[in-house]
Length: 519
Image (tube, rainbow, N blue to C red):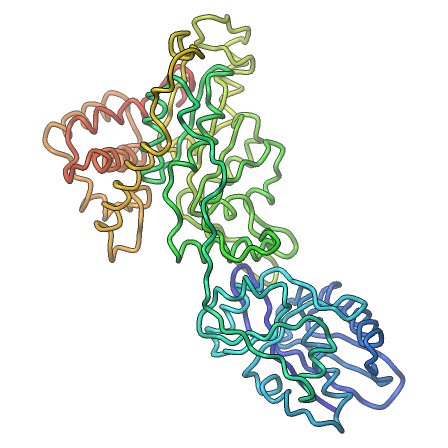
């Protein structure tokens, strides 16, 4: 007896159709799985046998052969349990009415889910990208774990059949008790986070706050350097609070990434807040960039559309930091394996903080630095010049004066709401300007679009020319100065880049003593 059920394989964020073929023949009882299946798929035979028997279903005492096709691609994950069980049920119930299995046999419906030993169907990772991939192939009906229903509801124009146990699936296949489909596309956007740190908590550091606003308005990278205790970490953690909410397309992309990584919270369906990721400096290259035997999204992809905050930047291994160079430039990362290649988006805003030396007090007017010059150069030298060149803003965070941080002063500083208003207005200008250009933010401008949208006035050109020749800046630095100036002009509500915008951003690209002479 032969049967087949459509399911999916997840490669990166791409769900590709996969057929689970089941053949039951007379002979010594056996259960073989072929088709480049990994250990988690081969172990399905034990889960399926136990779940069927514990639900009162008969597991066929025959020679069972399972083939996952196409057989030249590796199959990983526990979501193959349910389609394999469905195929075995159809083979073992050949004398029964299988009217409910018509869509499963013909590929009009797909099946995803993991089985427990007592017959329940458990949630699996990557349901959203797998359903979206199958939908592009023409599939419109899906049998999924009931726990994955909120996530799957995001996909429009499909029918969802929530399955809570293998017994429910058996009853549906035989037509005894059909599972009622649920209409998809009903999206409930979560409300704002209950508590986001406010810039109002930070006294002083108005220059750094302005730099943070520029960085947020154009999704530019930003590096802060200064002595310990000057507010670098506080500023970095508050930047997500001045970013506007994600658009629906961005929400869907971010939710797919978190679904594939298995990081969707229980009951969560749609991620509406911009991600904020702050990995420790002991993070591995694979955890930061993505990878593993089954390639999974790394921190840079989990921060897509949001902020990747690297505190104590110089404590990260140099080879880990240098792996950021290509994703920062391209907006995606490609992970190659022997039999597959996957691509993950990585359009994130890099925010980093560091001390200027090992003791942290180089350039501080109060504390004397105890590091030798060679020690200091070795410390900042962990951050390569090419990586520094890819970070748009370099901000020196100085020690505030007492009158700025006096706890008795009223809270008359600038708040996150005020900063966010300027960011939203600037982003609205960018959205209108780049309609049809394939980008959303100034930080993604290429050389062709720079010539179209980032031409300063005559006075601004003279300042740029003098700065470029005096400091021997690279072409990349010059282009990034133009992008920053474009963002500063947007915050000013100006359609033209003027001299004052160039002068404002020059200090964020020129060499500074806290960053070392090489930068």
